[in-house]
Length: 196
Image (cartoon, rainbow, N blue to C red; front, side, top):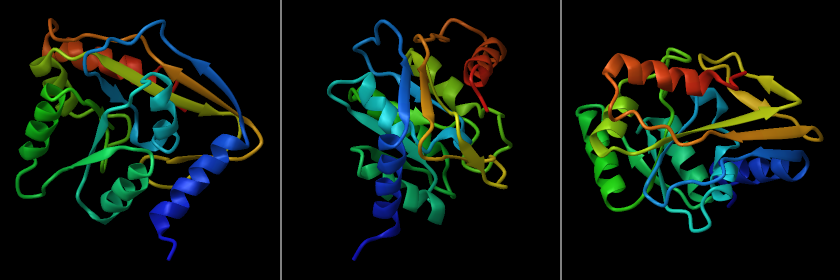
């Protein structure tokens, strides 16, 4: 039986295959584990961007444990990602799991305004994670020439076929020497650079 997550993964690959692609990538990504970040509304095509910067991908993604999150986790598993689930009763456990994953050599993906918003408001989790582990942050963006946006809190972007997908990966950003306020501002600026 074909499941909804498998259908979603096929659809993502179909969108990717039927669009022209332009990639704006940094000259180099450090070998050490990175935190790759993107807004919740821009997450659909990011699993297809990650392999462009890692020849041997080792990625985990921070995902909420509610129903939508479980579906998302199954979908991204078809692209080789492992989920790091949050817990309603103890949300700090997710941060500890992410810290442990970085120590073990994994890259960790995060949507700083997920899972419930507000849109374009980064939570403190990404700052705590990057500063604690002294891990560089890399910002991901996908800017489609043709798309529709859902009427959800995140204005979720769904690219249409037969256009152009323009992918952006930022230079690595380090925030471990910055104050919390400075770090939050730098993260917001990086995430907004190509936001739709």
